[in-house]
Image (cartoon, rainbow, N blue to C red; front, side):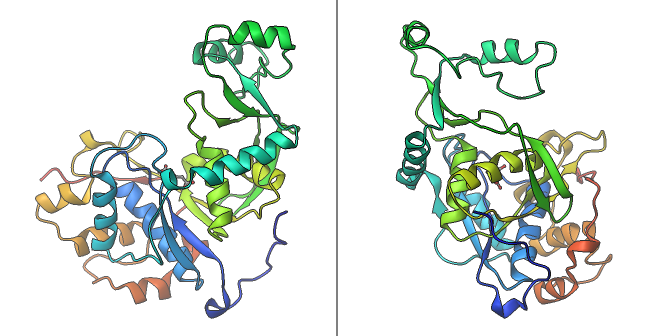
Length: 314
Ligand code: GLU
């Protein structure tokens, strides 16, 4: 079950836990992703934790993205402990967790198509974003009928709560929706929510720092951790980078990746400086050094608002 909450952090040298960065190798990291990685590194290193790197490659893999992501992080002076872990090499661990949930009667097969789920979920009074439970209580005959098309069903969690509360360094107590989330997709791939919970626990990660687009997933993940009798990490969901229109940063916004910025003549130190200045850790023209950043880093003083940027175009 979950760890008792800490009143105050022990001194850095006594921390035994770990933080992590867990990119999906679906493309190059942009300034927003790089800033999140820097924050995850600062949170971990400033508290004496190990910092681990995990590649979430269960889907959306683009050739060469993993190597470029790791090399960009290294160029920004971010280091990590031990080997880089890839989720695609850990399938057995996800199978084990699913088997445990299954043995506890906490799973069921779901034959719904995306379209059926959307239609049912948009009905009046349906909790927003929740799976409506269409396949939760099928009779054996109904199950046969729904499975007769030959589609392999997804496997869902039989959740017995509809919400769960987590503590977040940036957001305080946060209560969010829990539904019958997918554990294994119809194509056999373990679902993100399951894999992340299994990996964080098995890697000894007790501090999860990531973009706040994932805040709403944290209650589902913490609930799943509890069902699997795994410890819940401390969360810090940090603000995303947005373009001037308030939309998520994207390629067409200008030079947003390290490679693009280098092509415009910026060196990695200058890019790091853009990030640290956005976090209030450095001022203009100040040279950046990682010890100084660790010294200055104060989670309580981080900006709470999204980082609105206009990337250089030349
Ligand atoms: N792989 C996810 C992403 O790149 C992050 C997952 C996580 O940090 O829990 O958006």
